[in-house]
Length: 579
Image 1 (tube, rainbow, N blue to C red):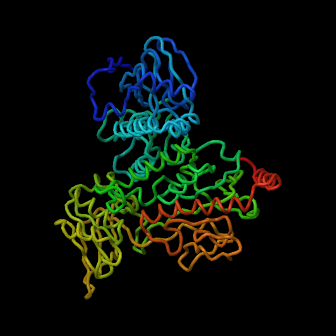
Image 2 (tube, rainbow, N blue to C red):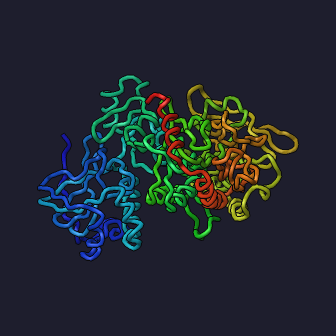
Image 3 (cartoon, rainbow, N blue to C red):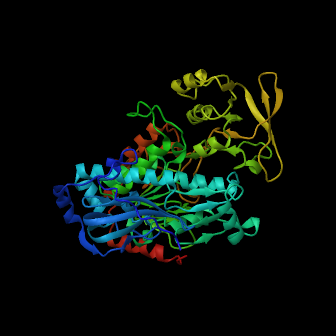
């Protein structure tokens, strides 16, 4: 049985955390009166549970009378107090915008009366009450940030801290803005006891342990996502105005603008929101952020903003194929072996993936020293070491600058003679000013070595016009070279691509009223890096995501959803068995 600590009354006390007043604001009686039309009154007796970690939350609770203790709890029986909230304060975090499971416990301390605002009414409130909505939204976001920093409410990952599987799960949860923490059996006695009980065989690791006591052996991203309720339910029960495939900057921009203009929106991504931009340590040339902003912070705000306007999320959820059989009325997005999800229009925002060069044996060391992104997780792993970074684009430049603050040195390898053709000037200057970044021109990696199923140990490269070869002890290589578009799932649908696989747009006959962002298939649009000829910049992707919404409106107006079309779409959906 977990040992609980009774929280001292923090209401009115000196704040023990930065920005306390923004995280736990107190509403005035007049402000509460403005919220009353959005909710209903509920009463709780002493020690009653208002919400529980891992269980679907009812929405936002505004305390009218009494006090509520908020505690964090993990699957190992630890219960830690966070705060006690009283009259005028509210209980929720960003997960309540979409009805996600609670990440903390809330328990009544004495009799409590609350105004309960369910998720759909909460979204209406945030839009309808602009000034209050701003304060509430800021508090919800900051609360999630604090939960991430403490690891509260998320799974406990148990396994070697440097193992490929643990690092993969950490990156997945971090990119999705979900709290978690890691216990290494070699360093933590409690983790050793857990492993002895639940994972006597090495192949049982990693473990993921949840607040309700559930233990998942050989934990995967899919299993954790299912347990955390990350994928929106009920998506197959309706026909959306627009389905967006890809939750990078372009897809999120489309979701924000489309949902804010009243369209029903469903967003898919196979792994996490943010795309390549979400993995950027710092973006300094995006309008409005003179000191720069982390890619995770920028795209995380867009993710919350889209949900605020009612966009639904299916993340992680890869789209396997697009069925255009009934394209004159609806499209079917096949996501598994069951019934498809139907939408009247589709925006492809799947972006492009960094290429995997032909370096033997590259695949052996992916996740064991070979990386395609540079987050704080990887930076911590290679702290104080010499690392290699390959690539000459903006993402490579941002990664090099970021890593230079953590590692001994960065050997930055490019095939050409200069960075000016592919990188912004401010990054070139930043790289030149960093004493521990060595720019190596006309250089390429030709070999990797290390023990099988173990960490990368040595790297061999060819440098300069004379082709001199060098080998050195390097345990971490970061690859940011070129990009291949993620368009394979469109095979079989009449969407024209160029020789490199990027989607051609704006070539449909004028009589269809096509947009410059519409593909050869009317109703299917492409934005961001996946579009042939697009500007490979965050600002360009966001601009296209906003621009395409006007074209979607025109297309939907020209293709109204008649009862016959709706019946056809439903028949197509029901023709496949449920999974």
